[in-house]
Length: 314
Image (tube, rainbow, N blue to C red):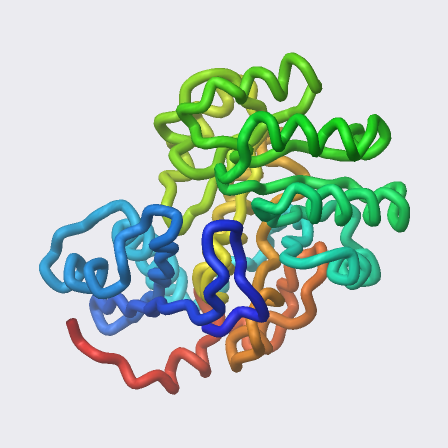
């Protein structure tokens, strides 16, 4: 897939390798997605596909197989996984400046998640512009662990009280082992979210960010419930098959863990990429999941498009 620009603070690449997988049993196929982010610690695609071929099932491969299994069972029954399922609404994932935020607001989003970079002066400028242009807009910040305490404190000071109050939570501001996490909570009253490494994260944080592409959703929901944390389910900024699986998991978890799943998840990410037949099938990027999109089909959908793929046996 080709992104419109770099999608996180650790990489500026715009070409993203991944693979769709097909799991066939009793003449019925189910589909999953493997989309590694090597710069964030994932194993490279070639190695993951080799694992799959050799039956060595690592975390990410298992999640893709779980997706394919769920999809296959629904297709065997001729059912859509989204029939009667209420998927939580989404924030808009923003890579870029205030012009991207303006587009999100025009599309109806009331919460945006900003992928922040290392340049704190630029971050301050963007946040001040947002504060001025959209005074009612909620904001989430994602740093992918690249910030330092001094730079973060300077940013929070410069944006002022009003903008700080609009920040819903800050995701992965520092590496997990950094002692600066408590400073943000105690000194500035910031809510904090953990994404990478959440299963082994210690200490005090407020939001568990779950990605069904790489996480055991039920295990992390159980832990969050015990700790009194909110859960935000997001896609892995991956193929629409993976994106759809994340949306399905969010809807299921929203029913099973009533009140635990945040009312704004991060499921609408296909607009970060240049159009393909699959992203076009997803429809417009809006806060609500499009359960009425054309060719919803069975399972996760995309029946016609999946039938056109030339599959390679591994």
